Image (cartoon, rainbow, N blue to C red):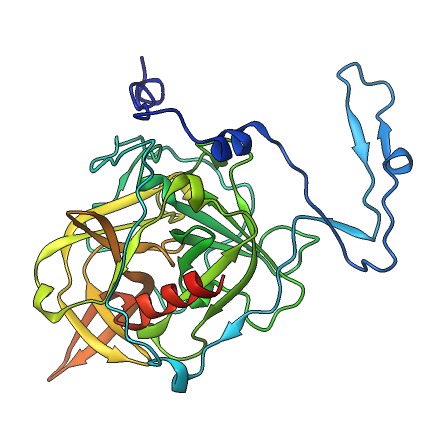
Length: 359
């Protein structure tokens, strides 16, 4: 028995999954968006044809120039600095599904190299850093809360391949937290797709378990301290999968090795499997923009952007930051200190509670 055969064994839910999840697992939808809805007309009898000389039942669907695959998103909203502190929220509770319980230590998996399907790379703000040796571990995301973390694909030209990818995490029934620089600001038309528990090309939960993004809200062109955004999903995946809570970072936690960071970096398993790094400290925090830069020496690279930095409390996992990138600090007289950085502070739960109340 090899590792790929061993890993899925005895990872079973406590109870039967809810009807909503079963329906998602059983479906295999094909979303089509009309570029000009007022003129579009879909007659499947005219557009769907059997491929000649095929003994495998192959059919061809001609979308023409009127349709694209997927669901387009609506305009995103950039938050003004003046609105960043309208309401102070310290903590937003997680939602642990009663059918699955909680797994604190997911099974580790093999960091198998898989050639990427496309040449897309995670969009960069500034470089991330790896503090040798690279301590990230590939894991098998089949249980709560690990299945709530997923891969995000972003299209700036919906008729082509995705432009970049990153990471996000469910923080509400139809809400995903990620970094702002992953969002397609100023682009139209655009598409984003969130795939929870992404593993070797599809969700471990089923090929139909994913959602396109309807819209997004976050801080734009501010700083790494507020490099955060929330995405509104068309499909409320959190109803069956659960979601993470969130907290405002507290200075008293500095230097405590409490934290875990997860993501889908291209340098680990070619971004086809998730990786995590655990029990690292926040070594410093700085006010920046509307939020707070949380600095650490947890390894990261392209594709980790938007991944949650979280810790464990008695009632479940809470996100304190969303991974942004790296930074360099020049210290007297001639030294350079390199850190990786997450966006956090009270702006994080404030943003999430706004989304929960309005979406």
